[in-house]
Length: 236
Length: 304
Image 1 (tube, helix red, strand yellow):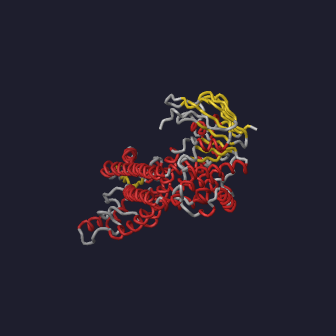
Image 2 (image 1 turned 60 degrees about the horizontal axis):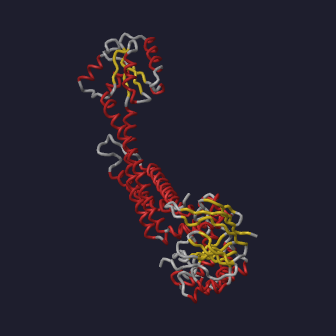
Image 3 (image 1 turned 180 degrees about the vertical axis):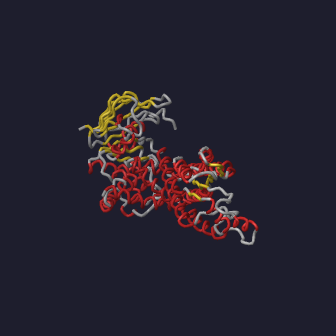
């Protein structure tokens, strides 16, 4: 069953840059997919289309039965409630505790306090941070902050977990731990995972589906895994 | 229940947020306080000018003197013609015949004076005074026109009113009143602008929070709610000092000046309940401006 269905999608920015060109792909429910490619190849634009931070210029983007292209700004929250998003820069609120950061989204859904508490504790337990509920983000290591970010993303039990370079700021050992957590979420909860990454080692070790983009065009879609992106022209 | 939970959580979050962003909250409160003190002064000034103008307006009357040859029928006819004029307050129309006027004047004159003895010597036939109608009007600005109409009534020998006050003072007070209203509205606009700017700083400092709220699937309404409640609280807190200053300051000034400003003619408005109405106005202005300022600022960050 297709959870994401993209057909002949184009994204051209106002400055004339074509970030995505004639992209068609589908992702099944429960799949784990890596999106790779050199910087500026359109990876981040692709995930932004999935969580409707950007609208496609042309074509169709269906996520969990919602047509993203036709979604009004005031209705975007309905899509976002089905998703969990993990960022490279964590995007945690420094003045809130770990517990408050994870509970942040749920509180605005009007759930009862005891339900929020049990869900937050469950999510923090899954990422191994049950003991740090009262800590503030600046008291945590980079890996721990990213795990809080994952807990916040999964606390609402989303159908899709979007990870935009979640290990970009982390050392190799911590990166592996983070990937392990995300992989377990995919396996145990059946959550579809779309992960943008540059990390060859992680991609090669996971043997998951790998989508490679080049100048906004899909150049490779390997079901067997393996890092195929040519990053020889990557801007450093 | 769900809506109540969201609302009560947002109230709690708004209070927390005021303390967590303490310096910016203080900036908003001070900004509101300063401008509301000025608004309060403008309201007090405007209300007192208005009160003074009404006081003067209420004392303004027209006196229509009746010809000595007028009979009882003529007087009744004049009365009905006066009552037919639209601007005349019918229930306040007073008629005084010449004997009553003589008696009233004698009451106010010392018995030893020559005027008293002269008046005393007048009989009903020799009394040289003229009977009169004292006329109050509904609209003081049309006093002149009403006087002209009265002059044209048969057997009305003369008409008198305070032309100077009507022609000079009343238009002046009307201008002063209008100018102060414009100043109050201007101050409210300036307050809104200042509070908007301060709240803009607060919200700019918290744009990450708004971004994360959007990312975790919070609806635009729910994102706006805590900021609007926070704006309401900041406005209410900001209006506390101006309210206390108004209540204490006005009562103090009223007592010190013994209820009169500059001369005995200018009476100040009695403090109670005036200061309470002004306080309620300040509270409402502060709250609404705080809420409105927050609302329009947060909208900019929501891509609505």
